[in-house]
Image (cartoon, rainbow, N blue to C red; front, side, top):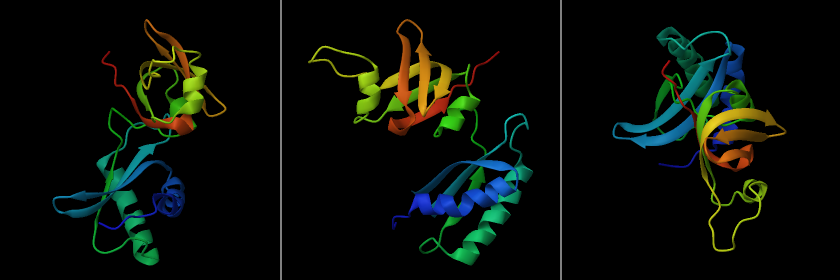
Length: 171
Protein backbone atom coordinates (compact mmCIF):
# COMPACT_ATOMS: atom_id res chain seq x y z
CA UNK A 1 0.00 0.00 0.00
CA UNK A 2 1.49 3.31 -1.07
CA UNK A 3 1.31 6.19 1.40
CA UNK A 4 -1.17 9.01 0.89
CA UNK A 5 -0.91 12.64 1.99
CA UNK A 6 -3.90 12.77 4.35
CA UNK A 7 -3.52 16.52 4.92
CA UNK A 8 -3.83 17.21 1.19
CA UNK A 9 -6.70 14.76 0.94
CA UNK A 10 -8.44 16.48 3.86
CA UNK A 11 -8.05 19.85 2.10
CA UNK A 12 -9.71 18.35 -0.95
CA UNK A 13 -12.57 16.52 0.78
CA UNK A 14 -13.42 18.76 3.75
CA UNK A 15 -14.96 21.65 1.77
CA UNK A 16 -17.26 19.22 -0.05
CA UNK A 17 -18.39 17.62 3.22
CA UNK A 18 -18.83 21.04 4.87
CA UNK A 19 -20.75 22.27 1.81
CA UNK A 20 -23.28 19.49 2.31
CA UNK A 21 -23.84 20.60 5.93
CA UNK A 22 -21.74 17.95 7.67
CA UNK A 23 -18.44 17.87 9.52
CA UNK A 24 -15.45 15.79 8.42
CA UNK A 25 -14.37 13.95 11.58
CA UNK A 26 -11.63 11.68 10.24
CA UNK A 27 -9.95 10.24 7.17
CA UNK A 28 -8.15 6.92 7.23
CA UNK A 29 -6.17 5.27 4.42
CA UNK A 30 -5.72 1.63 5.36
CA UNK A 31 -5.39 -1.95 4.16
CA UNK A 32 -8.24 -4.39 4.61
CA UNK A 33 -8.62 -8.04 3.58
CA UNK A 34 -10.55 -6.86 0.52
CA UNK A 35 -7.89 -4.30 -0.51
CA UNK A 36 -7.08 -0.66 0.19
CA UNK A 37 -9.78 1.45 1.85
CA UNK A 38 -10.36 5.18 2.26
CA UNK A 39 -12.55 5.59 5.36
CA UNK A 40 -14.33 8.92 5.66
CA UNK A 41 -16.01 9.61 8.98
CA UNK A 42 -18.64 12.36 9.08
CA UNK A 43 -20.89 13.87 11.70
CA UNK A 44 -23.84 16.21 11.68
CA UNK A 45 -23.32 19.68 13.06
CA UNK A 46 -24.14 20.12 16.78
CA UNK A 47 -27.86 20.04 17.47
CA UNK A 48 -28.76 18.36 14.17
CA UNK A 49 -29.09 14.80 15.42
CA UNK A 50 -27.26 11.70 14.32
CA UNK A 51 -25.84 10.60 10.97
CA UNK A 52 -28.20 8.35 9.01
CA UNK A 53 -27.55 5.82 6.28
CA UNK A 54 -28.92 8.32 3.75
CA UNK A 55 -26.41 10.92 4.99
CA UNK A 56 -23.55 8.47 4.37
CA UNK A 57 -24.86 7.67 0.89
CA UNK A 58 -25.11 11.37 -0.02
CA UNK A 59 -21.57 12.13 1.17
CA UNK A 60 -20.23 8.97 -0.48
CA UNK A 61 -21.59 10.16 -3.84
CA UNK A 62 -20.14 13.65 -3.34
CA UNK A 63 -16.69 12.42 -2.26
CA UNK A 64 -16.57 9.71 -4.92
CA UNK A 65 -17.24 12.25 -7.68
CA UNK A 66 -14.58 14.56 -6.25
CA UNK A 67 -12.01 11.74 -6.10
CA UNK A 68 -12.86 10.68 -9.67
CA UNK A 69 -12.20 14.21 -10.94
CA UNK A 70 -8.99 14.89 -8.98
CA UNK A 71 -7.65 11.28 -8.87
CA UNK A 72 -5.45 11.83 -5.77
CA UNK A 73 -5.26 8.17 -4.69
CA UNK A 74 -2.97 5.50 -6.11
CA UNK A 75 -4.49 2.37 -7.61
CA UNK A 76 -7.78 0.72 -6.77
CA UNK A 77 -9.47 1.34 -3.42
CA UNK A 78 -12.84 1.16 -1.69
CA UNK A 79 -14.54 4.23 -0.26
CA UNK A 80 -16.35 3.86 3.07
CA UNK A 81 -18.35 6.70 4.60
CA UNK A 82 -19.66 6.27 8.14
CA UNK A 83 -20.76 8.03 11.31
CA UNK A 84 -18.30 8.41 14.18
CA UNK A 85 -20.28 6.12 16.48
CA UNK A 86 -20.64 6.51 20.23
CA UNK A 87 -16.87 6.64 20.83
CA UNK A 88 -16.42 9.61 18.48
CA UNK A 89 -12.80 10.57 17.83
CA UNK A 90 -11.77 13.98 19.17
CA UNK A 91 -9.05 15.51 17.03
CA UNK A 92 -9.44 19.29 16.93
CA UNK A 93 -10.05 21.92 19.59
CA UNK A 94 -13.57 22.34 18.20
CA UNK A 95 -14.21 18.61 18.79
CA UNK A 96 -13.27 18.96 22.45
CA UNK A 97 -15.31 22.17 22.76
CA UNK A 98 -18.36 20.34 21.42
CA UNK A 99 -18.04 17.81 24.25
CA UNK A 100 -17.35 20.12 27.22
CA UNK A 101 -19.03 18.60 30.26
CA UNK A 102 -18.86 15.10 28.74
CA UNK A 103 -16.48 12.24 29.46
CA UNK A 104 -13.49 11.43 27.25
CA UNK A 105 -10.43 9.21 27.10
CA UNK A 106 -7.22 10.91 26.00
CA UNK A 107 -3.73 9.56 25.29
CA UNK A 108 -0.80 11.92 24.81
CA UNK A 109 2.05 11.27 22.38
CA UNK A 110 5.26 10.08 24.07
CA UNK A 111 6.94 13.39 23.10
CA UNK A 112 4.19 15.67 24.53
CA UNK A 113 6.68 17.99 26.24
CA UNK A 114 4.36 21.01 26.63
CA UNK A 115 1.59 18.91 28.16
CA UNK A 116 4.09 17.13 30.42
CA UNK A 117 5.42 20.52 31.57
CA UNK A 118 1.85 21.67 32.33
CA UNK A 119 1.51 18.67 34.69
CA UNK A 120 4.06 20.31 36.96
CA UNK A 121 7.28 19.07 38.52
CA UNK A 122 7.79 15.36 39.07
CA UNK A 123 10.49 13.12 40.45
CA UNK A 124 13.37 12.64 38.03
CA UNK A 125 12.79 8.89 37.87
CA UNK A 126 9.02 9.10 37.27
CA UNK A 127 7.31 8.78 33.93
CA UNK A 128 4.91 11.57 32.91
CA UNK A 129 1.23 10.69 32.72
CA UNK A 130 0.02 9.99 29.18
CA UNK A 131 -3.47 8.52 29.72
CA UNK A 132 -6.45 10.46 31.03
CA UNK A 133 -10.06 9.44 31.49
CA UNK A 134 -12.37 12.10 32.81
CA UNK A 135 -14.66 15.03 32.07
CA UNK A 136 -13.72 17.75 29.59
CA UNK A 137 -13.92 21.00 31.58
CA UNK A 138 -12.91 23.60 29.01
CA UNK A 139 -11.00 24.35 25.82
CA UNK A 140 -8.97 27.50 25.32
CA UNK A 141 -6.08 28.41 23.00
CA UNK A 142 -5.69 24.81 21.73
CA UNK A 143 -5.50 23.51 25.29
CA UNK A 144 -8.00 21.14 26.85
CA UNK A 145 -8.69 20.89 30.58
CA UNK A 146 -9.82 17.44 31.67
CA UNK A 147 -10.87 16.56 35.21
CA UNK A 148 -9.82 13.07 36.27
CA UNK A 149 -11.64 11.75 39.32
CA UNK A 150 -9.25 11.32 42.24
CA UNK A 151 -6.31 12.87 40.35
CA UNK A 152 -7.31 16.47 39.66
CA UNK A 153 -7.53 18.62 36.55
CA UNK A 154 -4.96 18.40 33.77
CA UNK A 155 -4.25 20.81 30.94
CA UNK A 156 -3.29 19.16 27.64
CA UNK A 157 -2.10 20.64 24.35
CA UNK A 158 -4.39 19.46 21.52
CA UNK A 159 -1.49 19.12 19.06
CA UNK A 160 0.23 16.65 21.41
CA UNK A 161 -2.71 14.29 21.69
CA UNK A 162 -2.13 10.90 20.08
CA UNK A 163 -5.70 9.66 20.43
CA UNK A 164 -8.89 10.87 22.09
CA UNK A 165 -12.46 9.63 22.08
CA UNK A 166 -15.75 10.69 23.59
CA UNK A 167 -17.04 8.18 26.12
CA UNK A 168 -20.69 7.22 25.80
CA UNK A 169 -22.54 7.47 29.09
CA UNK A 170 -25.59 5.31 29.69
CA UNK A 171 -28.31 7.34 31.36
